[in-house]
Length: 78
Image (cartoon, rainbow, N blue to C red; front, side, top):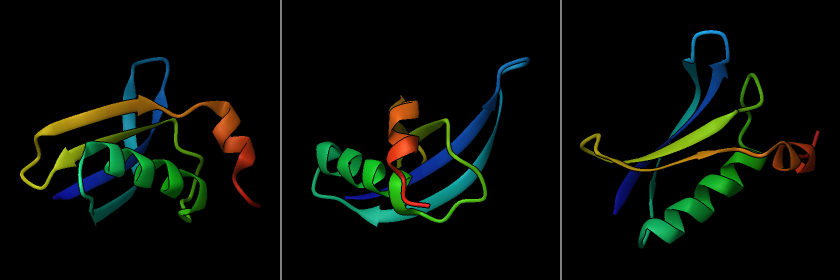
């Protein structure tokens, strides 16, 4: 299945968010898409560290959303 993975930053004062990375990928199922998103969170070159990720179907229907833990950010290579 084709999914769109979006990484974004969230502003706590008003819950606004800005997309800082977006990738369209092929995944066998949702679990595979989640694994791909977690890998991309650590390796994708983005202008800022992402706070969260969403995975959607190609037509825009949301499948999954997750807050990215600070621990994962620390593991990301510099």
